[in-house]
Image 1 (cartoon, rainbow over the protein chains, first blue to last red):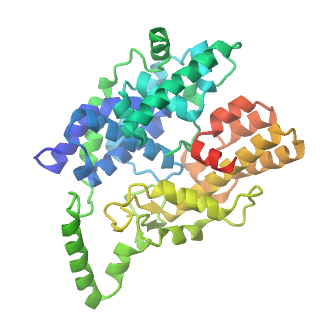
Image 2: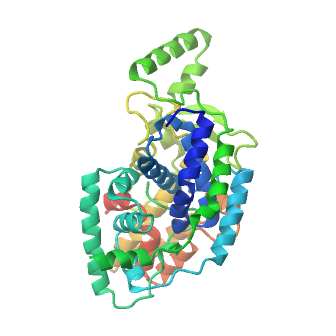
Image 3: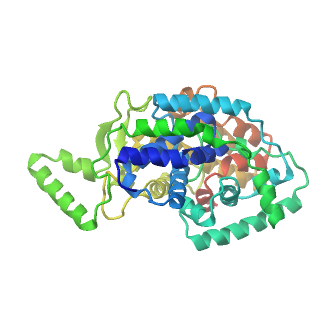
Length: 185
Length: 242
């Protein structure tokens, strides 16, 4: 990252990308796990501040990649809690109560029918608004492989949509994770 | 295809949400994290410099005792979370980037628990090692680069991988209409919630419900799609055991 104290760098990183990474987490887990995971992401970024890319586009991809891994391994009560995290958790829970439950539709049902890998890639692109190159970094794969996988995932989704006959019979993506969270790293 | 893009965007559960309302919260969390002590080697060092640093560390450690060397090079660090640092888990911090981690991790396999046929604890351990060491440099064990895991977390990961293996076994039993094997697998998935360490974790997530309640319920009802949604969150592992 750029010159300046490491603490300033970390705050800059959080200011620039925190809400977006938090959005990634909110889409995939509960408010309390999202808050704890954000803190863990920042802890890792603090430990590895020298590894954080310098440009904005790469930073968000790097952070989402870290968040993804933390979520994958956060299967226990081994979560560091701080006062700021408690406040973040409270804010997230209040917001979650205000947020209407996701509407079931043939598309959400079709998404649920996809493989986790297809679903993850599509949601990274269309929900989290990552580019294919950023999604590739977050997933730890090559850009070309990511583009190929995206093409395939879209075809799978189209197939699933065409065969989707009984909407609203599946669990929505929002409820697909349990506590402790189980996601692949 | 453009329609498909729009349809996908419309399914975003946070569409039309302004995430910037959390900006100040996320910044404050970052500020608190920056107060934490961290390993000295926070900036990436050149390979040459790392070699020099490691050499100096070894030279200093050699006459003063083995503890420092062991601290850097072995998975058993002898360290535990500080009293105010972690909520509950004060088990030993294990250095996943140490060379002996693949051996040490097997100490935490809950071998009292049965596994499906053709699945072994070694297979599960290998899978965990792959996952937990992907940030490590392969030839230079470096505790600063590692992602320390606690011993209890390693035990828990074994429990959850065993759980996943039983879900796969259940899925395969359903596919071949083997009700006995399916029931056996459901029993084992259900048992995950009562494993001692899982019970402790659940107690810390008050109100979260039993770990496998919904999955077991769906399994008993034969709702395969729901179980797949809950369970296939580790595609690599599923692929490996199928």
